[in-house]
Amino acid sequence: MLRLAIIGRPNVGKSTLFNKLAGKHLAIVDDTPGVTRDWRESDATLFGYPLVVIDTAGLEESFDDSIQGRMRKQTEAALAEANCLLFVIDGRSGVTPADEHFAAFLRKQKKPVILAVNKCENPKATQTAIGEAYALGFGEPIAMSAAHSVGFEDLFGALQPYLEEHEPPETADENNKIEYDGDLDALEGDEDFVFEQEDLDPEKHIKIAIVGRPNVGKSTLLNAIVKQERVMTGPEAGITRDAIAVDWTYKDRPFRLVDTAGMRKKAKVQNVIEKLSVEDTMRAIRLAQIVILVLDANAAFEKQDLQIADHILQEGRALIVAVNKWDTIENKTEAQEEIVYKLETSLAQTRDIPFVTLSAINGRNIERLLDTALDIYEVWNKRISTSGLNRWLGKMESQSPPPLVSGRPNRLKYITQIKTRPPTFVLWVSKPQDLPDTYKRYIINGLRRDYNIPGVPVRLLLRASKNPFKSN
Image (cartoon, rainbow, N blue to C red; front, side, top):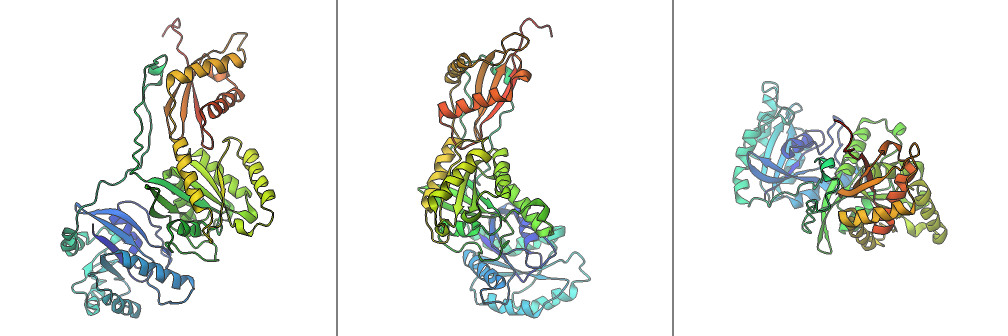
C-alpha cells in the first residue's frame, strides 16, 4: 500500500490535509505554528484508491535536544516510513527560505516528491506563489485548499502512478462495538435464548489507550513497549498533544496503543490547544477497549487521578493502573499498601482493579503490564449462560431476599446477560423502582465473586416483570 508522508514547515496546513484524506478529524488543527509534534498515520482513500497517510511535525531548522530539534527527529523518522512524499508550502506566504532549505533536504531522500501549494482558495491572490514554486525543482505544483476541498483531483492525478504500483490493503479493522437493542421483554423466561457471540478474532487489534496527568511518563511507557523512540519525550510537561496510535504485537496478539495528552484539572485548562488535546484524549478513551492509567509513584492517586479513573469506569472500559517511576520509591511495601487502600476506598464501585508497578524509563515490568492487559481483556469479554445465572439468582434470593414492598415480597423473576464489554445484565423484578441500591450492589458483588469478574465495570439494568392479570 502507498505510504504518503505530508511534510513542510509549520503552519502550512499539513494536519488539515491529513484529516481530509483520512476522512476523520484525527489531528488537532489550529492557527498556532507547531501544534503537531509527533508523526501519526491513518488509513485513507483517494478516489477509491487506498493508501496510508502520515501527518508530520513541521520541518524545523533545529538539530539540538530542544523541542524543535526533537520534532525534526520525529519528522525524519516519518520520512523513513514513507515511500512517497507530499511537500506542502503556503500559497499565501509564497516560497520562503525555509521552503528552499527543506526542498534541498527532500531531494536527497531518493523518494518521489509531489509539491502542493496549499491555501489556494483564491487563485488570483496565490498566482505568484504558484509561479515561484516551480523553482523548487519538483515539477508542476498542485494548487490546493485542503480546508475548502480544492485541488484533490489534481493531487490524485499526480499520485495515481504510485497508487497503482502498490497492492490494496486488507479489510480495515473496525471498532468492535457491541450493542443489543432488541426487545428485552421478549427474553423473559426464555431459557434457550442464546446471544450471538461477539467476534473475538485473535487477529484483530486490542485497542489500548494510555492516559494520565501531564509528565507522569505516558509517552515514555509507549516507547518502552514498542522499544523505539516512537513519540517525543522530555522533562517538559505537555509535550504530547495529539493522540498517537501505534500498532504493536505481543505474544502473537496485535495491540493498537494510543498515547494521549496529559489531563490536568478542568479549571487549569485555559489554552485552546490544550482543550483540543483533552477532547482528543476523551475520544481515545471512548474508542479504547482497555485504558492504562499511568500514575507517578511519588504522587499517586491525587484527586485528578481518581477523577480520570472514575471517568474511564463510567465509560465501561477495562482499567489497568500503571504506577510509574517505581524505581524512585524507597519504602516500596508501604507505598504498595497505600495504593491498594486507595483502590479499595476511592474506586469501590469496581473491585480488584489490577495495578502494575513499573519503571518505563528502565523498561521494568513492561511484559507484566502487557500480560495484565491480556488477562483483563478476557474478563471484559466474559459471557455467562442464562440457565446458570438463573439458578444462581435463586440461591442469592434465598440467602438474602429483597426488602418487602407494602408487606409483599419484591420477587426477582429472571436474569440474563445482554452484552459484554463490559459485562451487562438485565434483572426482571416485580417492582424495580423499589429495589434499593444496596441490593443492586449485593447482586453485582455476587456476580463478581461467583463468576470471577474482577477489575472491570459490571452493569445491572432493572426491568419490571409483566403482570398477566393487568389489563392493557
